[in-house]
Image 1: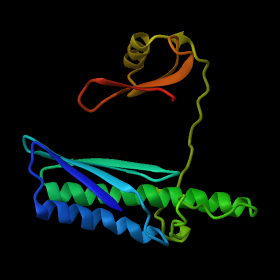
Image 2 (image 1 turned 30 degrees about the vertical axis):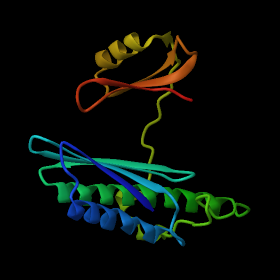
Image 3 (image 1 turned 180 degrees about the vertical axis):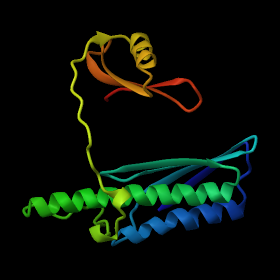
Length: 185
């Protein structure tokens, strides 16, 4: 793994850099061989909040986590735990699919390294369970109308047919109170 660590309103000291590389580097244990991927980490401080955002793009999987606490080292540790949970959930999903279809090859991450985790190692909260399914028709609308609909429903996100692009899009409310838009490429 190749690390890109930058600071925002904080100087990234050698100690912080080494701690981040050590904690995030532990994720390599889930791979038979060390993946050749880049780890993008942003350490930022706003008042008493110490925020860490980490993004790791694997060929078939993008893992991303962020955490805010009052201590930078605690934030780094919690982000590592979140990333580990995401990788374990993905591995469980791949293992189940592989067992269901015996003709599938083991899921490789593009450079010959496959994930290593056993399903029985996972906690109950790492398992997926769909408890409700909703179906609805899309009404073409612009982004502003979608945000209004989302706010009227009291939801944090809203899926809609974007009238400008004729594609399915998602608006969502960000932690800072502003809005985000997700569109397909």
